[in-house]
Image 1 (tube, rainbow, N blue to C red):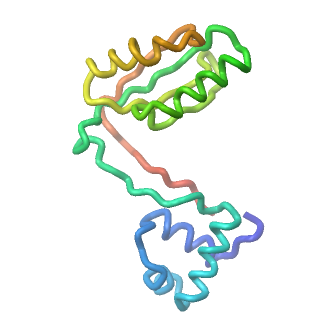
Image 2: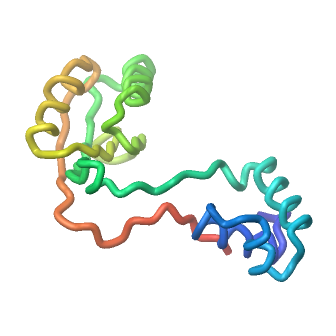
Length: 154
């Protein structure tokens, strides 16, 4: 963050809170005119500080509020097996996030489905088809305490 000044940081915080704001609205919050704010946002995108914009959807209203964390252990630790799993998860709409992790398991998946039955089918029919998986363990979300995509901006 060596190239960021206080105004850049303020802009990042504002956009992270509500990316639907117009340049004029952001400009008013940082006490600048819209044109320099537009140029700053453009620069922040070009430099990769802003990777994109998304709408945060309500999983419950979309009938996929049953959230499971699926810990996956590879059958064998080879590049081909890891690549096979990483490529496969890119095509699975149920998987919202996938991380290569350290510890007892190799990957952590955040899975969105409508029910336990649908999760069972996902594990058996979709993950079960991947011969690179040696084992898995699941944890189920009983209640959401905090859910943010915000990154600390200092």
